Image: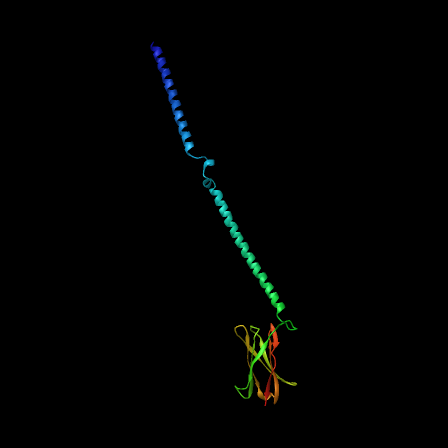
Length: 202
């Protein structure tokens, strides 16, 4: 009888243990299921969260493309400007009058011929209206028949044109009568002469 009680108690302990184990397993399983249900799966995550890296990559790629486009555009602009400048220079070369020696035609003009400064000298001044450079020379030429008297002066750059320094001719070198006066301009870039003016020596 005591043996049956002992055996019955042993079985009761085993059943209690098994039931307790099953309850623990059910509770653990339930907790796991609840946790899984409360945390959204990757497929249920908002698109913005799932695509953060992808969107960032896309933005970065677009920025890179913009930078590349800017560089390419800048390069194209510089190339276009260079080509336009070359075309303009070529058009200038074609449209500008040239002398037989290939220089640009300079257009000097006499601005005054007088002896008011000193009666013993004839002073001549002039401008070259279509040239603006340094290094050219102006030559004032008096001629009458086969007689020629000249003097060469430097130039003075101004805004958009150049002036010839005043040239003085000793009046004793000019015989009485009507002389023709011209200004000739010459540089490495251009050459030309003015229309003639007359000057009478008494």
